[in-house]
Length: 172
Image 1: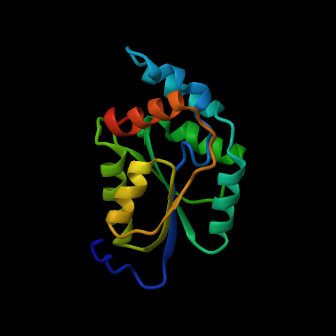
Image 2 (image 1 turned 30 degrees about the vertical axis):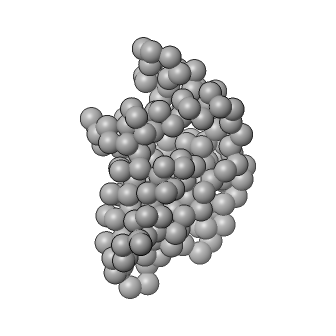
């Protein structure tokens, strides 16, 4: 049974939205992390060239009509400037951007649930949008409503590479 939700600040509601695989198509850069040694520098440097995922952009724009937006990503903090520029270039709604702290290698499911709980101290988290099945399951188990992002086409190799980056390597 999910844990009860923390009581948020009255009146403030937010939608928490992932970036990679939800708003940004990461497939073009997964080759950097499929084989060892993984080239994390090249993987993250290429993020500024991610094509947008039209369905994800539509979802976040609709959510922003009603709720505040918090972008929650496993991308490392060093990607902040490129991520913010990518948001501007693709016309994403304004919102708080939370990235993985330096040297934090927790699996995405652990990192994101901890951040969701922090966010829930100050606001009601009405929905969490994420593409990682393990993050989706962990968020639901923690009592959050989740919209699974299933719109990025992927083949088996892409899915395995992305899951390893998020859950085993704690890097995205």
